Image (tube, rainbow, N blue to C red):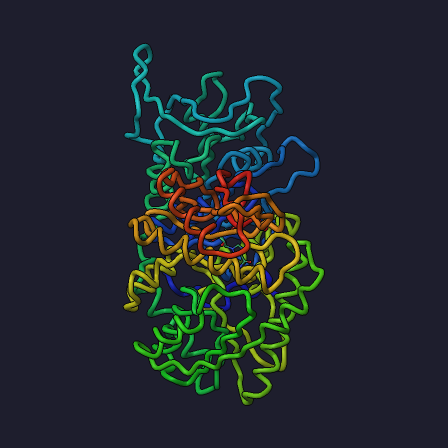
Length: 536
Ligand code: XMP
């Protein structure tokens, strides 16, 4: 299992400066982490019950307490471990983070029945503070105070700040919006600085991290690469290594990092589960053969996966079945390759977070990513995940730095369970074949119209329902496919892409004319949330 305890097994020395975020389950926590890393400072999420030894091993320059869905008024609220307040390093509480800090340090928090604030609002700065000095979106004509546009989402409020704290900002109801104890370097804000609607949010985070925590920008692509390469070398030594290789950007970047660290001393294993896009292996093999001399073992196991998926309808069940078979096949391969000592995977940070491993609680699992926690403890092989602490955009930057072409780096992500989660209900080879053809047409047209790189991800979904159509003079009673295209920055939230009617019309015509078995094409106009990007 990947646990919080073994999280720091790889690139923790990537940056001299680091901010630890204590996660109380806010929907914005990942965004917060990204904002910190965008400042060039390394940051990691830890659960609210993080231990003292974990914190001292991470050695943060400052701690941020995230927001969360709980009420600090409740008796059983999740709280900040007491030792955190004794560390003497700066602490910054956001929303629930501020309320819980206030509650634990002797202030008071009350539940609001009216005067709650959700969305854009304004706060007034009433006292000087290092956190907000010189920041101003408007000047209040009457008082002359600075006013900031902020994003709030709260039902509780700090009614009394703890002893030795000062109220720095107030909201329109004159309630506490910012509080600070400058001597102890403890700060709290009721709004969300990580959300772009808070106009000075980035500046406030920067002020806390760079000025108050004295961090410097050192989380840079070149440093990250050097440190990961060094880490791989130290760990692996002269041992033999095998890499789980799907040919996606994550495993490709991992392969290139391995290459840089240990030369050709590793083998890539590519398992074909029959749930891949059209000629996926050929595409990646040709690319690698032309550009890098990777040793790739191809393992065709389509039938095994399809057999195991017979009768499996539930999406999570499908993921589990695929993950299980994948592990079994992989184990078998490794046993043929002894003496392998290390199994390397291209797991990235969002795989871990989305699988609920490091989140507030396991009930937050949205979709289990099968590359997380599959292979631990097998056959005395040790697991190495060199890019496990990186977000997708960071992996992409590394890919470009390592010389991968833009077309590979910005290729649309393809999920581990493949077409199985784009075929609703039971998976059959016939449906996979249809989907591959439809997907090809859709992608081809996106490229032809220069739309491919303007949207973040696009694919087709197979709906196992029959619909009546007409072709020539013939009645058709055939399958339905949905096209899905989204625009997103971080894949955590997404907007459906506003593709033109002309374009959709062209793609739809081609699909019903060229792909046998399809009588109807629909376009998915759901955003995430409440929908997710994939249908399952
Ligand atoms: P959702 O559907 O959760 O997808 O909005 C967000 C992004 O993650 C991809 N995705 C996966 N990737 N294994 C993966 O490697 C998975 O199990 C998986 N599920 C979703 C999805 O394609 C989108 O880019």
